[in-house]
Length: 459
Image 1 (cartoon, helix red, strand yellow):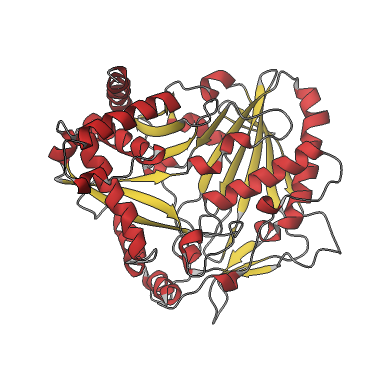
Image 2: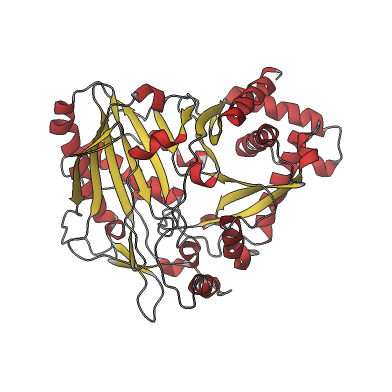
């Protein structure tokens, strides 16, 4: 057994897909599309799901763990590529290759950390969550696709950490996998059937690429530190020790009051202004963005918020809702700092976000040919403006990931402490509310929390 701070590694298993000779629909080799290639060497996406259970280590190891392992093996029958390896063959584009005997790394650990400190909305040092997610094995020649970890907090609960390769699956697809695993675990036994919305579609023919984006992105990767650099080793990003993680919520009631406030403000403007989007997510992103700009004390003239959107229903023709892989596109909301800090800052933010979303109407892939170069510029720190991104979506309904021990007490996206993104999800106990997660320096988080709370008090 190995010990890491408050974490003890109990065992590391290799979970293979349960053999199923009747399954001929799940592919064993899967090519990447331009949506996938875009993220080829970016850091993996990591989440942790916390579950409160008042059981001992012995009960967990004898009862809970076998159910998790067996249902994972069953689930991987439907998701064979997740047990495979990402490679970049000669004279070919990158592919996910699965062969019999391939497995997903499944770590079992025990922690003596405070379960409730980590699973409620306290300010917690960001690095405290790192032991709860597994590393993903990558090298220049190959990369594993998925790694999982279950960590016991004896007599209090457990958590499940997932580390997923960004070039293989986006948030929607990783959520589909987690919910499929939870579904089969809760059913128990040898149940194999998945409901249609949890049954993945691997059909790559539905992704059309008339603009040659795949070749464009592959050439950029080949020429990065190249020429002909086929490295698959993902970039390792560090998290400063002075960062803390915080969680905030906009309840359904507060969101409706925000909407009514903005409607009254917009009545004073022209008709074009009145057409601004006042959806729950737009209001949440705008309000959070304004508070964040004030808390960070930014000096940049122009500030940028990267808005992600699911391209699946917007493509021509649309891809199936259960398409498995990457399918995210996005556009930039741009606003001047002084305008965001002004009296009408929230309206300015909403207008900028509305314009970014409306730009999707001119083509979901407009300016996509420049997306990788933009991302690489940001990664190298060569961008002149502060860029914040939105990670996640309330539509994922992460709190419905029930393995049989109830809904999670908390779901965290660990990887935002390396990207600086704003995490959004549905609220756990408010069907129409939205939860926001941030990682900031402690003094910035305290200022943000004060601004966030005071702004809602006057509604």
